[in-house]
Amino acid sequence: MENRTTINAEEGKQDILITREFDLPIELLFKAYSEAELLEQWMGTKVVKLENKNHGSFEIETTYNGNVMFKANGTIHEFVPNQKIIRTFEMENMPIGVQLEFLEFEKLTETTSKLNMHVIYKSNEHREQQLKMPFANGLNMAHDRLQELLTNRS
Image 1 (cartoon, one colour):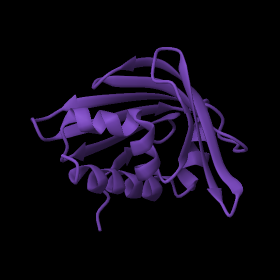
Image 2 (tube, rainbow, N blue to C red):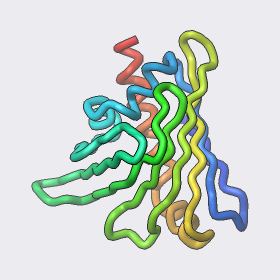
Image 3 (cartoon, helix red, strand yellow):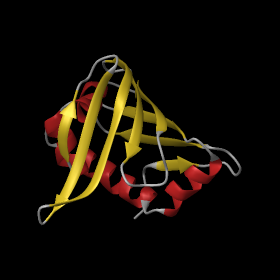
């Protein structure tokens, strides 16, 4: 099956561009990124903290058999409903370090929308470490779950 989420990583750069079109109204797509209950469902992780406001913060974690397997956190620098989220994102205990993420939500039609993410890493090396992980497949699978989950709500 073809990945509908595309990741553009130009050689020698320290950023990536992620795009995905959804068969969802922009308001519903934005809720998927801003409401803890929805985030937990499509990301398959627990939202420990989510302060959707300028200078807010977030924390997520995934556990397996009572052990924390994945933990990430960040600061929300700008939050404009149905338009954009600018935040930092850091996976704990990973050498990738903090990344800066610009999420822009674009209305295509009344029932379709697009997510554009620009992710900037500290260095090209940090970006390459991210790309060596099963990052692309994981993100595509999560976006597929998001589409499926919210298609039933629209």
